Image (cartoon, rainbow, N blue to C red; front, side):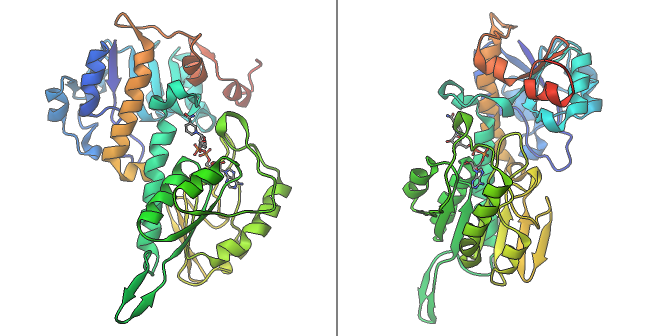
Amino acid sequence: MHVAVPRESAPGERRVAVVPEVLGRLTAAAIDVTIESGAGTGALHADDAYTAAGATVAPDWSTLFDGAAVVCKVQAPSADEAARLPEGSALVCLMQPATNLEMVKVLVTRRIGAFSLDLLPRISRAQGMDALSSQATVTGYKGALIAAERLPRFFPMFMTAAGTVPPAKVLVLGAGVAGLQAIATARRLGAVVRAYDVRPAARDEVKSLGASFVELELEMAEGQGGYAGEQTEEYLARQRELIGKEVAAADAVITTAAIPGRRAPLLVTGEMVRAMRAGSVIVDLAAESGGNCELSEPGHDVVENGVTVIGASNLASSMPIHASFLYSRNIADLLGLFVHDGEFSPDFDDEIISGTCVTFAGEVRHEATRQLLGEKP
Ligand code: NAD
């Protein structure tokens, strides 16, 4: 099975879908790779490294897709790029179909089989392919580092001849994959960490990392597939009321709360920001999906009453070596499911394949996307 890997075109994107280290795995699974020249540059992988590991390097799109059954990317292609992908091929990426509907329409007309890693069912067999988790691990780690770097205080406690410095108080809201990684990183740096999540299962995970779980008089709710369930505005208003004191007492707040397919829940209002001490920092890891903090703007800092609100934007791309390495392993595992006797042959009875499929053979197969496009089931 032949796979093509284009250069990422989104501004600032430094990751690449396949790194040289995973080419051996792909070859062993009867998958060969052609990569666009320069695709690995952002992740510090030169064309030569790909050639040495057995890939072919194509100078541009004029030959990149020759014989390709599958195209692998990190981010969704633009609608223009989608129109230039080979008709009838397959596309694997973090597609976010709900926010890329024009591109989805192009994929349908070009009869491209589109498989989105953000729709992967979270079953144990799919863990090796779980790109949302691998990228969230990077995001959570980096989010904690940003909080430590931007806070005008120490994270750890210091006992010096000049006096004792107390440790920073960090509050993490949302203790999923990114939140737990942020907690672990902030703890390693010596902060005192408290955390909250609406899923009851998060309590023990938070405690196992040496953080305290914030108990709120609020019914906790787990939705489907290990995710949080959708919350009403009344619920969120009550949560904000209860969490207010915790936010005000924190030096740094790292927010990661998300509901799949929905706007991120609003947990920290402007008023709550103004009640924090000057010099405090909020790192909003949900800024790109609407923001957990009312004041956050993705990719920008907002300073309000001396409190800095950092709207994180694509943090995974800021650690491109390991983000790409983990993503490539996820891709390699998923591609292994597609290939049979060296041919692209997806088995739609497999829930991983049917669950990730957005479009196939000129149809939208993903129900939520079909509804957004106004198509009848
Ligand atoms: P996510 O990115 O969708 O959400 C991040 C966190 O925000 C979640 O823990 C969610 O419960 C929390 N959240 C939502 N609304 C909130 C609110 N109002 N207040 C506070 N927190 C709120 O989730 P995720 O990190 O991708 O994954 C969530 C969980 O899925 C994991 O912790 C794990 O239990 C499960 N998971 C399972 C697998 C698997 O393969 N079985 C893999 C990865 C994750």
